Length: 327
Image (tube, rainbow, N blue to C red; front, side, top):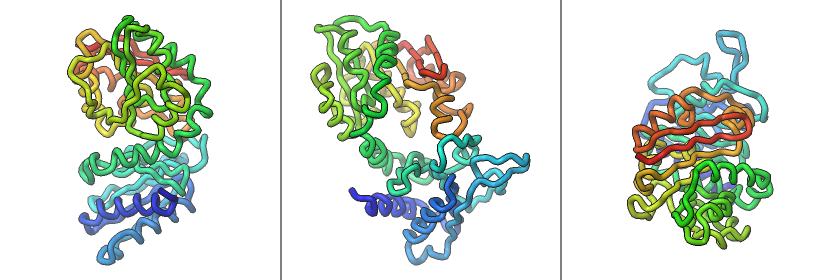
């Protein structure tokens, strides 16, 4: 898919989702006013002729009531039943906002590359995730797959540390769900030993191609599958490793329930990222929000409600690690 087709696909989808909800005002909020205005114009043009009277406004961060500059003009806008907020994640890196605009938005789009917008969130009242999640996940990660290891190759020791925290049993079955280019697969294979088995699962074909190019299919079986619907029997695995997965799922509770289904009682779940939450958020120009699924006060009850017990939680700047046991 080329750049014009990607932009057209995103704006056509949004126009189709929003069109039945007239009258409405769509506010595109972004860190780069010019890019936000351009996206707003493309979105307005995608509406059918009968809807062209609807307004699509591009707005940029304004000074809120406190006088401080935030990441969103939405903080000074009064809520309205006919207003739909489309938030663009983009603009200069390092400008830390408070995340309020993104929290209030019904649609969130990764817009760091304005030529390759990718939908990252749509409120389920607007569209079921089945209409957009797989396509947009593959668009996001597929475009990054070839350079992923070159950009993040220094993380391999951190992955080995996270695997060691799981306490794997030799001879067991380990799943790496959302394995990407397979950076955890060698460590998992070493942990289960020659009598064990490792399965790397990812929903993006380009990521699995990159894993094969790196030779990681030599220590694991690679499988193209959706983490929300794993083609595995109940209680099959002793460990599920999930790096950078849970916060990308449209419904984290449903995803964790599926991971619990394929794990035997007493098995482990390792949720990992090679950066801490605050450091990762700052890298993307935002602050950590207390309602995020990996916040400890949220994750503990979330795991408890989906068949797990949280037994370890670490969130320093250099990594995120949560270990849970299948009840």
